[in-house]
Length: 319
Image (cartoon, rainbow, N blue to C red; front, side, top):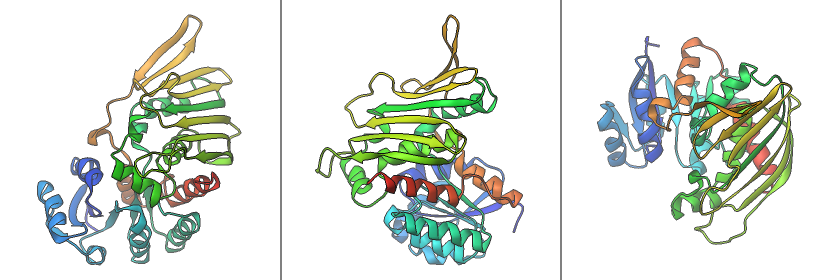
């Protein structure tokens, strides 16, 4: 392996071109060497702006290349597991978008294969986490409110759920977890760690292909002992209380998703600590953290075990 990690990306959709590739292109430690997409033409169109030397309509050809040290898999979910499995069988470090697979059995199989092969894996948290989530995570890690004990996640009308009808239909018809479950579970686990228990239900109020999942109500308990509640759903616009609230042994924190502001409770009221930067390639850390793990030769905490955990939890909601 060269001093720089040579990356190939399978699946050159809008998010790959708008976030993953620009984020990786900013890193001196990364060399983008190959792109695969559904056609030779679309792969070439994605490669040219980043001066990526090789493009192909056959993802198997990309995985087999000697100048690809690690692979980002950003395909549509219904074909993702096949690509990920091939990467793992080839022994190549593999990063996957969420969800890792469309059912928990397949996700668990891929996580077990990665472990058996000793392959370093990476996984992405939901994009809305960028807008303030890292600030809240850092405040919790620094112990600003002592040990977290209770939490709530409330969201109705997050703009991330306002995808165009085709995108929402794909999320509902072809993937598990759907957008709503993926958003909530990804953020909960990123902030508080693995969940020990999840009791709730994801209900869809509309049957049309242009309607997002409508309501998620759940109680959860983390392995740390923290307990909380989720109340989330689709709405034409954000509603009051839109965000995450955490109560600890020494105080309370709140993260307002409308503004990205994270605030701490004080005697005189709430004091704003910091606001998250607007989501963009420069702030998009998951693929960078994956590259850093590959360079260090160490598994990242946000790997396929966690990815399989999220899919299993979402499946338990009856999604």
